[in-house]
Length: 589
Image (cartoon, rainbow, N blue to C red; front, side, top):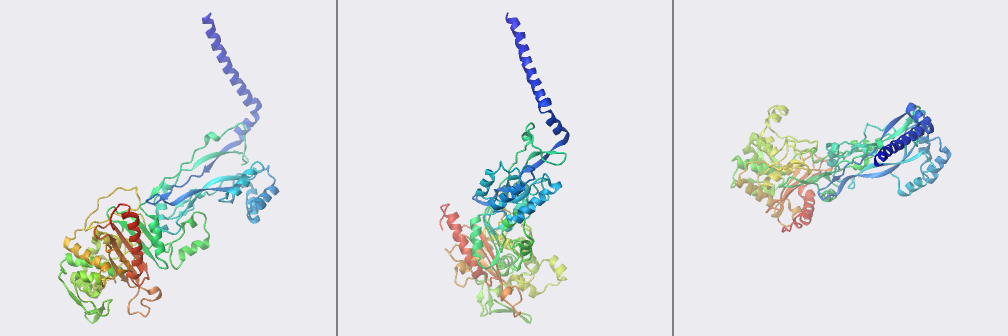
């Protein structure tokens, strides 16, 4: 009996499966046969992009510097079901969209070649507008809400040169046109790390008939073909955005650049250029007028002055002059030169900034008081060949290993002298470059490297701005302990002793630095130090002297005096650093 039951059960199961298959085939071929036949013969699938958010750019504490915010946009598509007059009323009177915009969109959509395309009516909708549209979604097939991602820079102009901005992507979606989220990095870190920040767009599909019209079917599901979007990766920086904001605001009406970096790690805490621009302007399409103003503005807001502004260093270069002269034996610790307020070289007088002179000064006192006469004579004793070699040793005339366009400036080496001066370099030229004028230009980043080498007893800083790189062992510049001690003593006195030129940054006696004034035009000109020909100001420093942690360098365009224009900025940075870094570590002030 049991044996006969097993075949019967098997027959029953097979019969049930056959019935299901027959019913399904009947349903497909007879009930929905005509629709399936029409779909198979006359329709095809059209891929549509699903936007993906770009990765965020974060500062060292996780604060958002650049972030992609979701926005809801309203699109219009042609539908034979909807009443055009009702659509117009709803868009104009209920949603408050201007008549001319609505008319323009509807006219575009009416063109036969645009049957499947969506046209943007309004972007970045507010919640109340979204609710109104959702409440009428069953009434209008023509309206569609789409989520996109807008790039937002919460700190606006602060630091925008290095963060960069976006540009339009030539790759357009056939149905929706351009998405904000597909914009590409055009400059700065947005460009350098574009492949990392850019997410992977997803996709969905529309069913299109042979006439190009969208088809809606209850019997065919295409949802399974969807590809999920993947957000971009975040980029973490070494930057302290609040420190940058403090520096940017502290410039006031002045323009210029500033850099703060950690001496041991090489991490850049702040890198500021002013004037700047608002990168939010580039997150969507921009008018020609705004772009023209940015590109041709008299203050050049797109110019990154930290890397691309190359100027005479003025007296801050006396740091290198002192090191080179001491190391090459051109001067010694006991060497003293008398300064009557000028130095007579042939028939020409080379004047000191202090007309009454400094009297007898040695190298330490010359650094403190920034005596030009001492460094004229030290430079002449040194000679241009040895001097240019030391300038190169300190990194001048070279690019820095950071991912930004740079103008490394010029140094008076043999190549420069032969190429541009036809091999002629006079003693007067040497006197000028020894105090940071003439055939010598640098950028603020190079000034910071110079100061870092002195503060760290000869160690080159491996500057970096992101946290994704490997720590590289610092190289060392061979400078004797005695030379370093003398120069460091002079730099401490610049800020803290009577007659020092850096007293405007004085705080707790632990800041060391060097000020400088760079001439824009010759002193013999009637326009000297007036209007746009005012001297530039430099101030490069390190803190704290007893155990150096950071370098702070500030360049102020037309600041007249480095001490007066840049000193107060450095003082604020030091105070911020003490409150937010040293005190947190339990270190004494």
